[in-house]
Image 1 (cartoon, rainbow, N blue to C red):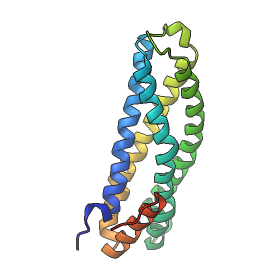
Image 2 (cartoon, rainbow, N blue to C red):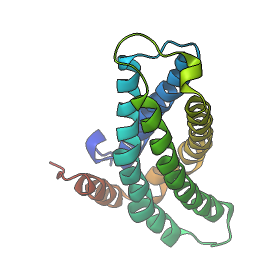
Image 3 (tube, rainbow, N blue to C red):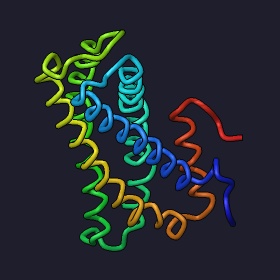
Length: 185
């Protein structure tokens, strides 16, 4: 039995990844534009939107995986020492590392955004060293997330439709929805 998209955890989880990729690309692009001295208020708005996504949506996504998905996957493992078990552990370690990096990046980015003028373009020299730190942390987030999402989308998420019954997948989707304050229809 196939579930409707709003009840399919794979659709919800991959959808969060797509949104994350969009924000990460925007952050990396913002760093490049600021280096070129082409930052403005619209760029500051893009950075602020990405920061909100990282601060609000990504912790929810991590909870989705850590509370709803990974424990259920672990419970179905036949070999706790398998490669799949290692991948689940790796995902949890990534989440801890990313949460710490999010905090650092949020501080760096907010400091930088506060220095972008409302009109005109800031001179690159006026934004150093904040710009260098911003770019380094944005690229680090991008690289860690790229690897993390690859493992999830290639190795973990496809297992959902194989390992879990439609009822189990719907239970997971219900938990994801409840975490966001809404109920599935």
